[in-house]
Image 1 (cartoon, helix red, strand yellow):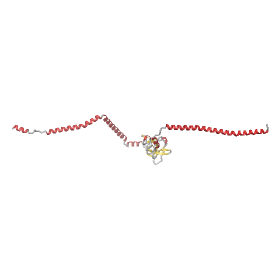
Image 2 (spheres, helix red, strand yellow):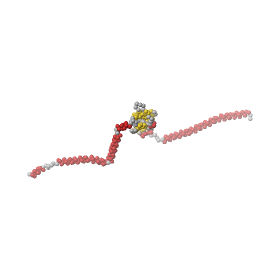
Image 3 (tube, helix red, strand yellow):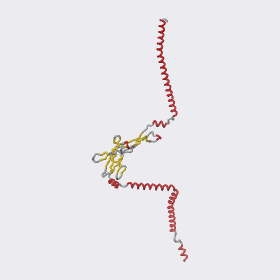
Image 4 (cartoon, helix red, strand yellow):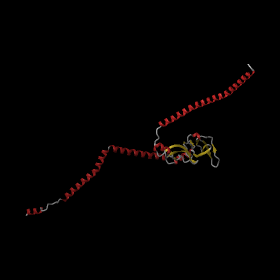
Length: 297
């Protein structure tokens, strides 16, 4: 082989190699682009199917749902008005009802929406024990359920001196009576804020007996009056029931009772007429004396 032909073959080989090297990256890019496009189409395909499925489901649900009535539309467009009820207490902590005055179900004029807490003035003045005897007395702080929601502070009040804070921190305090009257105060706290306070006086046993003896026995009088009222009501109801059941007999009795005086008055009037007619008869016949005188002659 000649040196010229050898050089041509080497150049041809270099040219073919360069073309191959230049063609491989383009082929790889084409394959990568096609793969990416195929993957995108694969992702778009299920997504479009899901969207179509969701659209079909929503259309089916809309078709299956019952049609809206005019009442539903009016209830949805009605402006709801709220009214607050009266608080259950005049001081301290209580509850009140929240009433709906417009838009109640069933056409009601008012309906209860919820119940919420309400508060009045803090100072509730002097209270009464929940139970007492000659030996002890039980006092209660102002609270609502749940009891453990609040904190309670009991204090023993002393005249012209600083009050003593007691150890008891519960809502109920039981105190034994002493030889002198005692005064207690309970503060109800919510989040370390006083929301109610009330005071109590615990009398001695002798003072309690004196107060009970000096107090009129209203309980016995009240029981007596209630008993008389109940007995009277029962008697009246019994009489009414008897009259309703025996209406015919009662009616005939009253008719006979009403007619009897009339009959007696008629009989008395007849007797009176008979007696007057007898008195009016002449005692001597006219002309009888003349006939006798003529006969004698």
